[in-house]
Image (cartoon, rainbow, N blue to C red; front, side, top):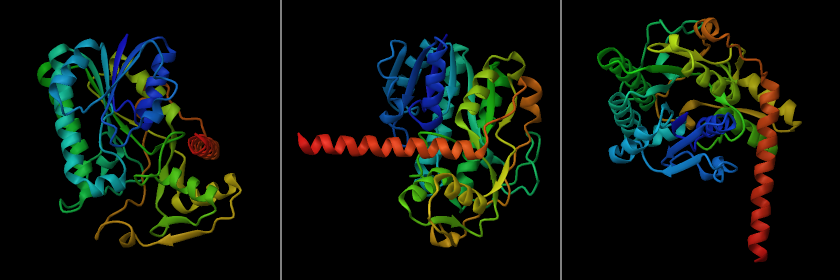
Length: 334
């Protein structure tokens, strides 16, 4: 099989590319490197079955050539990260909506199975204890950039399902919940790598709000397993699936776990949202997925616990820091 992975140099995309290559497939990856990086592809660039294009999914000519070559598509390219989304609202909307429209229209033209990565953000301000794929979606006001992001990903879902119903495009939608693991950066507001980096540097861990908000963190390897599994199950076509862990943890407790695993003396401090985000920023009290649908279809149940994930992220950050320091020493000596 030949797979096209949009956003292939990103955190999840790079792990997906590596997994597909390990199974013997050919992989075409495209990424505009706005949040992805060449570093994520270290170890893949020399693989004989891997091809990378530094380009944008908003360019129809480029995407047509890639889609035409592929047998199936994983569409992961999107604006990501709370900080990036708030600072670049136009790019966020254009990348998510226009980029997805181009990918889906070409996929329909060439009849390519397409998995569209969506987000738990589409559930918005719902107060349900667990979010199911059939639940109503409750978004906030349009003047807040966060809801523009959620709306753009929801538009992707509507568009994908419209192509499925009207033109018979085989499409699958995966709503991802707080995917974490090695290679994820805290640069764009991701909480776990931010906490781990602060702990390793001995800095205070900055918890936004009161810390009682809860999330469920799932290892990227298990997300990749689920994404691939869905594309190989014909009954998944035309459906939406939550992918996430059901191990609920408060952000304050997450900070505590990070300090314990890393054995860091860092204190935990709490900052009001208005000090770090736009005025009126709204956060969700709970974000817990109901994964009954994907469990019944694939037998999918996450097994990697939070402490192990934190340890892997810490190990990766230490190795990355050592590699950067080593490169700096070699450059200085040259």
